[in-house]
Each structure stands twice: as structure tokens, then as C-alpha cells.
Length: 320
Length: 283
Ligand SMILES: Nc1ncnc2c1ncn2[C@@H]1O[C@H](COP(=O)(O)OP(=O)(O)OP(=O)(O)O)[C@@H](O)[C@H]1O
Ligand SMILES: [Mg+2]
Image (cartoon, rainbow over all chains, first blue to last red):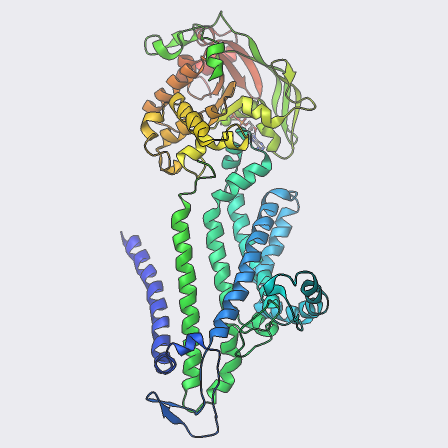
């Protein structure tokens, strides 16, 4: 009884913290929300205005002359780089987890698993630096020109290929960051699933591979969905690594897979300094609005995944 | 199932089950054709030998019960009969297990086809996290035994009927299998095994986790199924072995102490160890 009450209290604390967080952010950003309106979400014109002239009054708010805040390009950069990362990381993570759980000699398994967990624990700034020093020159000099040449017939892959900084690089660095998350969680689930589902499948005439694919993996699909949500969240909110490889684009929509981008999280960090020089405070409040939008996107993504979890029990396995 | 018409039952099967409890073993003289013959079977987990020189036969239309204290190797032996032990790293087997005269551990044996012929029911019911219908259809699907929806539906109904589950689930075939009760889940596992039309059924303590009524249900089912299949059943429940089996094998520390007609073994065992065990002096 007491225990249940305690758990209920703890659970509601989590909810309350989230509400307080979003609530304060919203209150703080409220003048910016009023000032920017819908404009904020559909325009690509983030500009702090003439910071050395005097503030003027627009829409009942004190702002610098020429200030606009439109962040569509940030939303696009965030969603696209996250989408690339998740689309690549889920199959890679699943493959690696299956391999670790079933394909590796038992002696090697603990070592490989240890390395994967280590990869998941590396601070993101390390990934960013590595991306900057190693990945970008390699992609920029070798891979992107080749991709432009051979895959150029696909609309989004047409050039110019750029320098190596940009959307695809950000997506790849994010992929590297979230693959270990998915792999480690899924591997644990597969290993602790025990052998009874596999045995049942084998006894019915399934091959090892079929058992793995049709029974063992579906058996951990909740974990797969759950870890993919966490990974998506991490990719959406990743700051430093993306900041170092994205090229920090301002006010341009990505029009191919090589273009430089900015994401919401990295933009907040990179713009904070200059935004703080705005005497009206509207720039910082608009950055808070960016944070608010990021929060809302995360909440929407999580809710969609919840719905997916609700429906996954209906899984029917093919024909019947 | 085709087997049913080809091989009419020799005894009344489960029909007179309630009337004559030991009578289910009325088969003792009329043993059918030999299906499985195990010769000099030794089995090792790594360096740990678990089975020693096991000799055993399984005949058509009989229930062979395996009894013995915990850890004596019954499950291991059972799993040797459909090569389920192949998946255990470091395990090793010597000797021969012949199915219809052909060594299943010989070269060129198709293990997948073997497992389809020799089905298995596990101690812990282990339905897949799919719908009820998808569970039964699984074996058909991976083995490519059915294509059209109507074929699947026919087999699903037939198998669920054979497992005595049809009436309880026919209106909710598209519900998750895990929403069934424990006994229903175990019967679903039986239906799932029957769907691929095995010839021999291996049951490893199929009722040990179930209540008495469900246990009776599964015992009746085993006796019914005997008309079409050979059944090897591991059980800790000596009354169960006595009730349903035709012959019984007593395992002790990895060896077969004796195998005999069930009535004989339970009333007049040849070996002292068997008598000690069935009279409850140990184990
Ligand atoms: N996968 C395994 N790896 C190593 N040893 C095993 C394995 N499975 C079983 N054993 C060992 O083999 C011996 C026989 O086990 P087995 O499961 O066949 O006994 P059992 O007669 O079925 O027992 P129970 O009645 O408790 O089910 C035991 O000593 C057990 O510890
Ligand atoms: Mg056992």
C-alpha cells in the first residue's frame, strides 16, 4: 500500500518536473511567441537586427530594428539529420545485436559487448572531434564526389558535393553515436530472452536464421521500439557533435544531402553568445522558443512511438 | 490427418480412459512397428557425461513414459531424439539414434525435416508472442507447407480441434496467444506441433506446471493422439505415467535401469532400484 503510494508519488514527480520545465520555458519565451507568431516556424530569416541602434516597438514588443526570427531551416536540419541517423542506426544496431547475441563465439562475446557499451558511454564531443578530424576530410575528398557522380541521378544526391560538412556527415556521426545505444539494449534483451522461443521455433522445423528473424527478434520488439525512441531523442537533442560537423548553416534550407545545416540544439549553443548582446532580450527569448519547439518535437516523437507500442501486440506474422 | 486413415488405432485409445486407469497400457503385447531405435547412446555436455550407453525403442502407436529422479538425463535424452541438443555449444553425442532404420546423426541428414517429423512439446509452454492463429500457422509457414489462406485456415482449425482447444478459441483466433490461460497455452503449443503433421511427439513434462483438471485434459489428449502418433513423454508424476503410458523407462544417473510394459514395471519391476524409486524410497 505504502509502496504503491510511494511509486505513484515518484511517478507524478517525474510528470511534474516535465511540466514545470516546459511551463517555465513557455512563460519565458512567451513575448517571443507573441512577437514571432507563425512566422517563426515557416520562414528562414533568423536575424538579430541592428544591434547598435535603438530598440523600436513592434507588435507591442521592444525589439531591435530589422530583427526576424524564422527557424524553418533549423527544423528541417534537425529532422533530416535525425531521420538519416535513425534509418541507418536501427538496421545496423539490430544486425550488430543479433550478431553479438548469436553469431559470435562465446569467448569473444563479453569483450565485444564491453566495447559496445564503452562506445555508448563516450561523450559526444569526442564523436564530434573525431568527425571533424577524420570523417569530414575523408567524406569531402573521396566519398561525396563519388556519390555525386554515381548517385547523382537521385534528386537529393545531386551536387554540389561541398566540403564534407553538412547534412549527411551530421547524420553519419549521429548514427555512430546511437548505434551502440540500440545494440547494447537489444543485445541484453536477446540474451535474457532465454532459449525457449528459439527452441519452440527450431522444434517446428525453423532454421537458426528463421528462428532468429521470425521469433527471437519479434520477441524483443518492445525493446527495439523503446531503444529506438531513446536513440531518436538523443539524435534530436545532440548538440556538440553536430555543431562540429554540420557546417552551421544560417537561413538556408538543405536542398541536397551534402548541404550544410544547423540543428535546433546546436543552434541554441552557437547563437547564445550573440543573442545575449541583444538589449531587448528578444533574441534569447526566441532561442528559448527554439528550445520549446525542440521539446514539443521530442514529445510528439515519443507519443507516436507509444502508439506504435500499443499496436505491436496485434502483430500477426505474415499471412494469418 | 493422413496418418489417421493409414494406421487405424489398435486399442480404444482415450475413449475408455476413465474406466480403466492402468488399462491404457493394454497394449503391452501388441507393440506396433518399431519407429525409433536408440543404440549405445552416450551424451556429454562438455566433459560432463550425462547419458551412458542408453538403449531404447519407440514403437508405432505407443506412449513411452520416461521416469526418474531430477537431473538423471530424461530431458537430455528426449532432446537427442530430434537433435535439439545440436544447439547447445560444447555438447557431444556418441552412438546411434535411428528413425525408421536411418541414423538421424548420420551424414546428410536434413535436421529441419527431422524436426518436422519428430515434434516437441516443452515443459514450460512457450507460445510465440503472436496471435493464436499465427502460432499454429508458424510451422506451416517456415516450412512452406501452405500457401493460400484457406489452406492455413483448414490446418489451424484441424490442429486446434485435435488439441481440444478449438471451441475455446475459435472466436478469438486473432487475439494474442499470451492472453490465453496456462493450460490453454500448453494446448496451443500442442496444436502448433500437430500442425506440421509430425509422426512422433516428444513431450517434456507437458503438464507439470498445470492444475489437475488441465493435466487430465492433456493426458486424455495424449491418449487420443496415440492413435496417430508415437509419443515419448517425460513425467515426474508416476501416477501419470501409470495412467497413460504403454511402456515405461526408468532412468537413473544417465542410465536406463529398465524399460518394460508399464503395468509390469509398476507392479513387478525386475530391478531393485526401480522398486525403490516407484515405492518412493528415494527420488
Ligand atoms: N545445457 C546444459 N549444459 C550443461 N549441462 C546440462 C545442460 N542441460 C542439462 N545439463 C545437465 O545434465 C544433467 C541431466 O539434465 P536433464 O535436464 O536431462 O535432467 P532431467 O532428468 O530432465 O531432470 P528434470 O527431471 O529435473 O527435468 C544434469 O546434471 C544437468 O545439470
Ligand atoms: Mg527435464
